[in-house]
Length: 396
Image 1 (cartoon, helix red, strand yellow):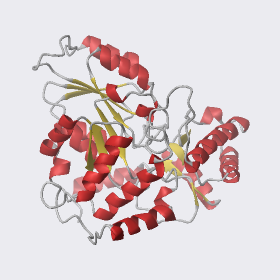
Image 2: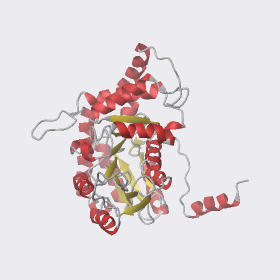
Image 3: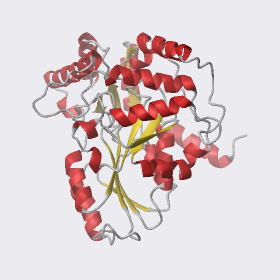
Image 4: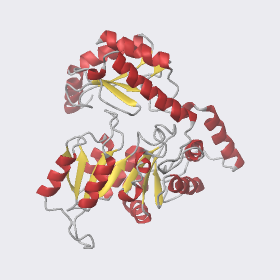
C-alpha cells in the first residue's frame, strides 16, 4: 500500500487532470521531440560511431565505475578537448546528463553568503540544484533585467573590490533558449549587467547548441563574459550527456566537489563516441565566431530547420494565430490554451489527426498558462507545418 500522504498527492493530481504517465513511442508526425536536427536517427552518425569504436578496438559496454575510479575512459579526454576547441573554452567537463550537470554545479559552486539570481522560468534541474545550495537565491521576472538590477541595488552584495578574497559572489542564471516559451533573453545586455555589478553569469544552452551552431553565447562572442555554460547532447546533438564549459579552475573544482559527477557511473564509450560523431557533423561546417561581413557556411539540416522556423512563423501570421502563440525565433513555439482539460483535449485532437503535439500542463507551467508545445525539426515538411497549424486554427 502506498503511504497515505503519497496517495493524497496522487489523488490531487488526478483531480486537477494533471496526472502523468509514460507514453508509448508513436509513428505520428513529430512535433514534440528535442531531436531538432534529426541527428538522433541519423544513419551516418550511427554507422560512423560503430566504425569508430571498431577502429579504436573499443569493445566495452559500460564505464565500469565513476570517473574518479575506473570509469574515466580515454574517450572522455577526446570529447572534452573537442568541446574546448569547438566552444572556444579553456576547459570542459562531461556529466551524464543536463540534470546531473546543473545539480552538480549549483549544489557545489555557490557558497554560503553568495547570492543566486535566476529567471523565474529557469529549468527544473537548475531549481533543484539551487535548493541543494547553501547560497541565498531570488528569482527575477522573466527576461526582466530591471528586476535584476533592483535586486542588486537593494542588496548588500554589490562587489566594489573584485580583488577581495572574502567577498560574496553573485551568480546570474538564465537560459539562452527557454524550453517552455522558446524565447531568448538579451544576452549582451545581461553580460553588461554582470560586468557592471561584478557578477558571474551562468547560461544554460541546452536548446541552443546545434540549433544555433555552437550556441548563442558564441554567436554573440560573449564567451569571456560567461562564467559557465551548460551544453547538453540529448537534444539537437541527438546523443546523451552534457558538459559544463568554463575555466580550468572551475573544472578542477567540480571534479572535487560536484557530487553528481563524483558518485555516479560514467557514460559508456558508445555514448561518448556518439557525441564525437555528432560534433564532427557540425565542426567542419560551422564558423564558431562569425566575423561581421563574412559568410557562414551552414550544414543543410540546420539551414532546413531555420527555413522551417521562418515558414512556421509565416503561417502563424497568415492564419491569424499570432495572438495565440508566444513570440519565438527558436525551434520551440507554444500556443497558450488555459486549463489542463482543454489543452489535453486539443492535443488529443491533433494526435488523432496524425500529429504528435504534446500538452504542457500545470504545475509544470503556471495555472492558466497551459500550452501546446510545437517543436520544429529539420525533417518536418512545409505541408506538415501548414496542416498542423490549420488544425490548430480550426480547434481554437
